Image 1 (tube, rainbow, N blue to C red):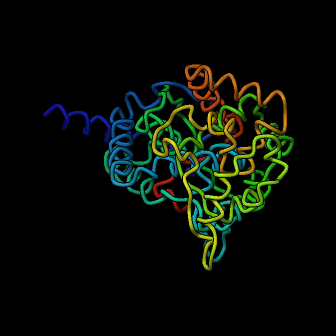
Image 2 (cartoon, rainbow, N blue to C red):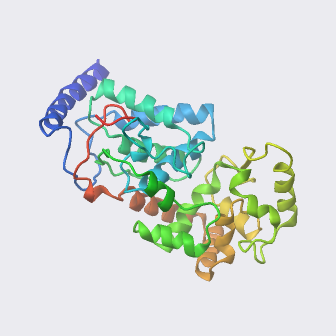
Amino acid sequence: MAMQLVILLCLVTSAFAAKVNEAYGGDITGSPLGIGIYQYSCPEAENIIFSWVEQAVSSDPRMAASLLRLHFHDCFVNGCDASVLLDDTKNFVGEKTAAPNVNSLRGFEVINEIKSELELVCPQTVSCADILAAAARDSVLLSGGPTWEVQMGRKDSITASKEGANNNIPGPNSTVDMLVAKFENVGLTLQDMVALSGAHTIGKARCSTFRSRLQSNGISDGPYVNAEFVASLQQLCSGQDNRNRIAHLDLATPATFDNQYYINLLSGEGLLPSDQTLVNGNDQTRQIVETYVENPFAFFQDFKNSMIKMGSLGSVTQSNGQIRRDCRTIN
């Protein structure tokens, strides 16, 4: 009975919100993010999101990293506006076919399932961008990492930028200078970059993304060369049809969100060149890595703060946003 009352309340308040949205042509002026945005309009929103993420990660532990990565790739292109979820059409080019995303990003179906249930319970109330932010947080928590209050109130974009995705998202062969430039371009600092790189404590990557690590003498290796690790990668990625073979970003605790990623870097076991360069390409980044090795709590705290900071990108400028009914298409 209590659940029925909650659903009824959601439907009533959501109907009002939908009417307001419709009155403004589906476009709602952007506003600052906040906590408890859906307390009355869709009180079950975060529980619904968590339930789907929990189910997905239970079936496929790698999905935690995939959902976290979706949020990253969304936020680095014109802010966190769910533009990464839009499908290409005859008259519209999205971001899914951009080089960093095509045949690489995963988890779209999980977001679509979440959105479908939310539309039944709270029609046109919870944005796809907010779903991505909450799913990223839940993925970290379900993998043993920290949790945090996700600020809500994002709007979904009515545009996308394939060019922005190609140019703004940091690549796997980036040097420290390149990484810092990409992060500063969206308003994040060197400290944010090192903390958020810790997301690579879970997930996998294809041989094609770390091919330069197979040479063992790349600039990102420097004094932190682990010949045995390099040899294992060479063996994995040898032979025909090896581009799509995958390796754990963190061999020691591949499905656990912890500080092992940073420990691996000091042992020369960073999988991507953009990982290993953090301990060789810059004294400041190496010092931060060493801090996270010694103090896992510091890593968790900085990661939480940087995720909240990244999650707010673009929220002030979303003057033409909307709440999509379907995350794959504009209303």
